[in-house]
Structures are given as C-alpha cells and as structure tokens.
Length: 454
Ligand SMILES: [Zn+2]
Image 1 (cartoon, helix red, strand yellow):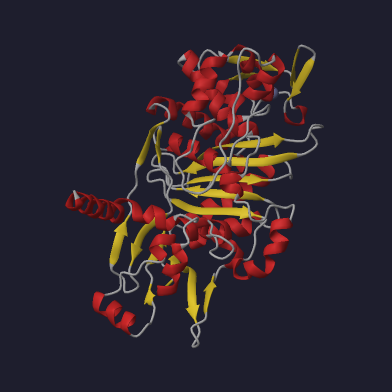
Image 2: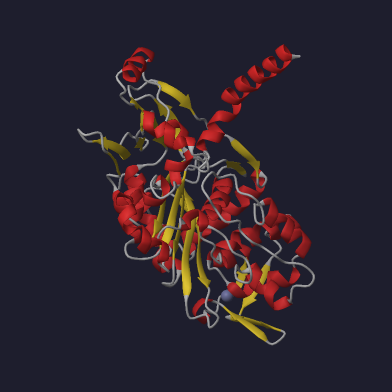
C-alpha cells in the first residue's frame, strides 16, 4: 500500500509538471510567481519585427526596472507587471519568468547565486500599425483593432485614454480613482452601442430569412414612424427608392428599422448568438460579453431600433473586428492571438504558436453576399473616402447614438482591405465625436495606407 501511495504521488507530480504547472504558475493568485522572479530576470516582450516593447534593465547593484520603450502606445496590449499584471505581461508571465538558457550556464548561475535570464516573447504586434493607430486616434477617446483575418493575428490594439506603464506605480492611486477609465482596455472591455455597423448583422439575418437580397425594396422618406415613434435617417436625409445594396451603402435607418418589424425575432437572436453575442469570445485578454436581446415581449419600437444597431445591443470593438474577420475569411473565424513564439534569450525557439480556427460563423455564400454590400459602402456610400486608393476596401460605417436626447454619438468604422484576398481588418471607434464617415473612416484610412506603405 505504501508503494502504491508513493507511485500515485509520483504520477501526479509528473502530470502536474507536464499539464498543469504553467496554468498554476501563470495564475495571478499564485504567490510562487514572486519566487520565480527571485531566480529569473524577466524576459523581453517584442513586436513581430523584433522591436522591444518591454524589457528589464538590471543596475549594477542588482536593482531591476521594467522599461517600456514605447510608453503609452502599447500600454493596454503589452500591459504591466507591477500593481498586479495585465495584457501580455499577464498572458505570458510563465514564459517571461522561465529560462531556457543553456543548462551549464544555469548551473553556473545557481552556484554563483546569479539570476538566469528569462525567455523572450515575440508577439504578432506590428510597431508601425500600432503607432499609426495610436497617433491617428489623436486626442480622442476610443479604440482601434487590427487583425489578420486569415490567421487571427492581432497586429495592433490601441485604447485611449491611456497610461504610461513606465510610471505606473507612481501614478497608480490617481489611475484607480480616475473616472476616465485609463486602465480599461476599451478594445476588448469596452461595451458600446454598435450603431450602423450592426447593419452587417441585420443584413445577414435578412439574407438567412429570405435567401437573397433581391426581393427587397424600400422608399425612404427620411424617417419612419410606427406606434407614434419616429426614427430618422442621419441628418434627416431622404434616400428615396432603394434596393438592399443602396439602403446598406447609404446606411438608411428607415429601411433597416422597417426590417426590425418583419424579421423573425427568434431567428434573429439565433443569428446573433451564432456571431457570439451573449456568448464567450475566444480571446485571451479580459473582455466583456456583447449583449443582444429581442423576443416576443420586445416592443416594436425597440425592435426597429435594434435592427439599426440601437436599442439594448452592446458590443466591443474586438468583437466587431472578429465578425468582420469572419466575413473577410469566407465565414470562418480564426481565433485571435497575439503571442507568436517564445525564444530563449540566445534565440533558441522554445515554443511556436500556430493559427487555429474557431469555426464557421456564416457560410461562404453569406460572407460573399455581405462583402458585396460592404464594397458598395466604399464605392458609393458612407465610406467613399476609402475609394480610389491603390488597395480595395469593403466596410461599414456607424454613428451610434448613446445619450437619451440623441445629441451625442460614437463614430464607428469596420472593414477589410484587398477584397479578393483580404489582408487586414481594421475596426475603429471614436467616442462622443460624431459620424463614422467623418471621424472613424479617416483613422482607418491612415492604418490601411501604413499597411501598404503609402
Ligand atoms: Zn433613409
């Protein structure tokens, strides 16, 4: 019996080391991390092209300082490791505090009571795109997400307002008592009304219920009134006779509100849930779930609002980027990821991460139909500022009202470039400024231009 217990312990020990140790050691609740930090100098976090995004400087007296050369630019995505951990500093904590230096070197270090040098983490982040996105947002609050739809690689993720991770400890008290949410990663944790970018979802639902966009026609008089409640088109514009493509391209609120009255609500909810509303998202950063609710008890006026992206629906910029990526990628969502590989400090590859598929959010035919609508937004609709570049773009703008008197709105854009073989998805939200075409499209254009070296 004694031998049996011993064997079981041994088995568990092996199992723990192989399968569970990284999770346990990575857990922010585990105090053993501090013990690791006593033996290993925390590794570097680098961009895809090797730029250092975080490193530990060691002074001659052994004092360590975590340095973030890009300051605020990568603050939310790279994160911090003092005052708790966030971002990649948290996701990759185990790798950063593990050393795969040569065995003999480690033995010598142990004997001399010197620290080993931790592994370096290479990310998919692109310094140019991140910097351009950060600068393009300027003094506005909001967020930008750039994804590669064919792989799920996160190329850029910006949130504003931000903080300087280099002075986090000094600024901590001020940051946690601030009302501006500087520490919040708006790209994944922000929950916004989607406004007209949601018309992508409503269009998909219309397509699913009708099998095509062909049978649709609407005569827009600049507003629609139902049960004494009036919904207007942006600036009261009268869009006149429209087919589905025109209604989508011009972002006609009246046409989409009218769909809210006829679309089957249970089916609409099912489609939203298939697009990961009210559901967990496959991302490793902390996030908030997007919300969608519509059933037989929903009032008609709310159903009208819901179909045009107002109502109770909320969504994060990352989630909108993921839906756009699925459209770009023939309906298949690739799991977003940011850590590409781990190397020892001498450059030996320790671990490689490959793209993985989450699954189909829609059929290839549905994705193609939506792409056609999104092309029209750029060729003849609210995204015309992106037309005529040396690359092609399919996208959707949005102007999401959020104050009860409708006086204030968030500006949205989401889209992808190189329609035939999509390169990148760009999703932008600018808080409290105005329309998507005026505020979000120019930011997206700067990012597309930078990607193509323009
Ligand atoms: Zn209209």
